[in-house]
Length: 96
Image (cartoon, rainbow, N blue to C red; front, side, top):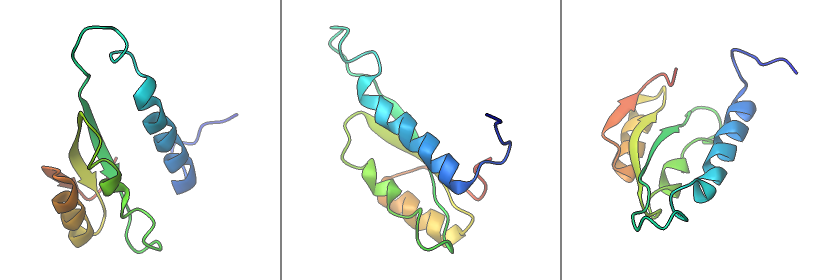
């Protein structure tokens, strides 16, 4: 299988969702250390593509020990709204 340097949106989302689904099984919670790990999340959305990316920022709002540090959207207004909803400090126009 060849790996594309420019993945499609579908490939990007599949990879991202796969990584996110692994969060609950990452080491740390079952080590008996008494402290839960702290995760930093970055959210990438894209307006003008059927409102597909917006709303992902809200997935992280009620997860314990997850801090949204940045959001990325080529639309400045969309990035600003996502940052306000998620509490992200930084916004980016390009996720690369």
